[in-house]
Image (cartoon, rainbow, N blue to C red; front, top):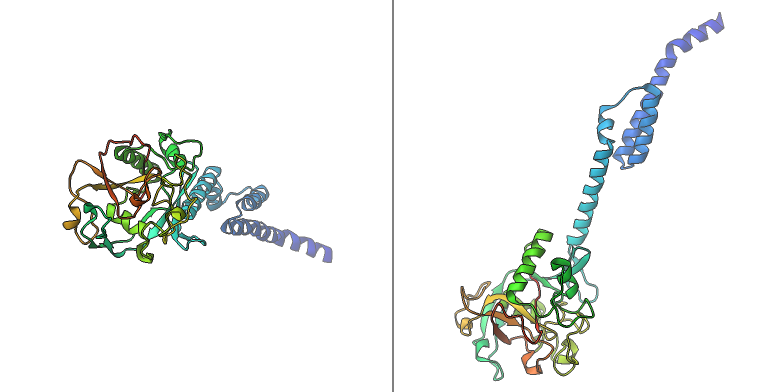
Length: 327
């Protein structure tokens, strides 16, 4: 009689016990999925299905191979974009920058905090178009840590127009203002950003060191050889970027190496009528502004206030025209 009682008890309760055991598999699968362990969730859920012959609508949807693959790609892309765009600080220069990647080629854009500065020069050696000195206030922006390299230009455009080749970290040379616009439009299509050339005021403010400026004659120093490749030390060629010292903002080669196009039209009298806030140059003109200095310039042309007026279609027969991005 006692044996019969235990036998009947087992027949009645065992389905309940088993059902509870099967339910544990289901809950465990959901916990694994919540914790991001997809493979363990799938394995546990498969055991549940084998034991019960049942399916769970939620897990069926979440563990669908197509959805898992899509979620993985989305997560990877989001992580990559976040790590590429997050502002970082350079431990050597203390500059804040953002890194962008285009077809495997990375480049940095340095943060420039806006401020007010005195633009131009009244010194006896300054050209007339650098006068009068006037007050300019700029908003925050980003500017390229270096001139655009041949490596980056090739990644964006698929070709390299430079005369001085042999090292992909040399600045691109021999490009017109119009070529630069084509490059920037293509870069923006690839990145979804709004890169551009800097305005002339943004260029000079950054070259002077922004709100960290120490008032140097050249970009980053009063000793030109410390910061620039120019006539006295170039051996007749450009050099890879970032080989000289940076300026106060952590920007390289703003004096020397290649001249850099700005967005503005050129007007020799513009400084006498320039707006005080975020000036963008004349509304029209025949020439565009070229700033900085290049590998073949004498020292006196490497000062941060020097201006040049060049036809926007001119690529420079001296292979000295390049660019630096702004954002």
